[in-house]
Image (cartoon, rainbow, N blue to C red; front, side, top):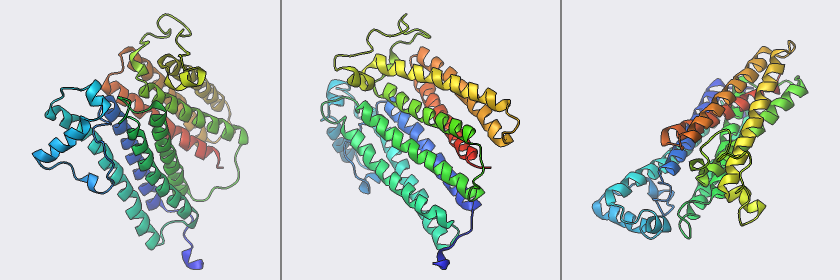
Length: 344
């Protein structure tokens, strides 16, 4: 057993994990752009290995196009689309899937190398195995999401989109946390519980807000109620509860998902700023932790402003992608803060 002992920390391992987290961030942003361009259903088959090769001949392109023409999105939304236009949406989805495959290689290959060189801290080995499993599960969930839009729908199911994004963000958070562990080494059990709890609550709130954003995106709810701070002149939208009942409305009602996203944004903004002010006035708090509380409050403020601009601009591609990127950066900051608050 002693032959498997590792050093307490490894900066190269930390850099590798931070790099993989960055690739996940790219995946999230590219996935959002794929959805915004209506490209997510352009590839109607899941071929984990052979799918890496795109159509290489005119006949292959015609075959792919024929597959797309069989699904409701083409028949009800894009009927009459040209082959060249299809190629445009196909490349978005193909690039998204290719990046997912490259992400798997970027994780697995260095993991094997670090393990063979005994540069991976023992306490992080099992975490890396779990991270790899989460990555594989994400591929399955991605196809499960796409499959929901191939029959009876012209888009993917919002709840599946939120699940897909939620799992990606869990992987993202776990990578960042593990990278911090690899950078600093094992924690010392000396921290202030009040601030640690506050940091964790903020991180969870950011994560929940990201899932609510996925429901807004999945229901295309950013294209309506484009006034602010009211919604069509109302504080509480009359269409909040749809015909399917409250539970159905929380997932599928455009009014409900946008109102919920706004409400949690207000609560998150107030919480982040309030805790940051308290942290600024707490001289006993470690400087790094205090600075992270302030940074999180600043990022949340910027993200809230960007969200308002994106909504009032009717969610154009560039602003929507920037808003999604901002959400991931806020979550990264909240993750590092939650991790730092657990340490001396």
